[in-house]
Length: 98
Image 1 (cartoon, rainbow, N blue to C red):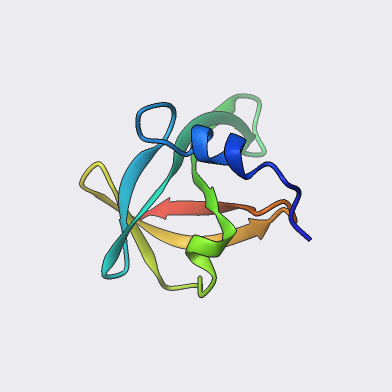
Image 2 (tube, rainbow, N blue to C red):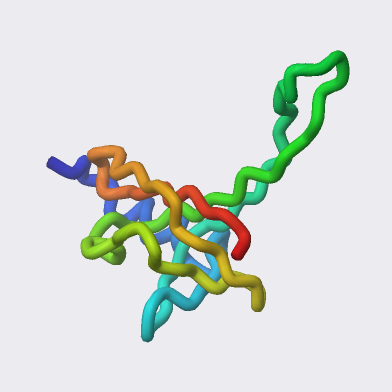
């Protein structure tokens, strides 16, 4: 059951506010792209850093999401590797550069 915050989600996922439009399949999708760099333990004495790209959008916009699909964001193609539907109508997609 989705929480009734559709108006807030409309604002958050507006390209005039926080979101951007990306290519998904044969169409487009609006959401928020984040490419945080996080420290990773590589088993040595020094930490390495790795990008963790993800895209957050409406769950209804990706109802048929599957591994092997791609998103094109700022002319860069990303493979969809995992996704999490959070139960509120929002899905976070974990990506990997192709």
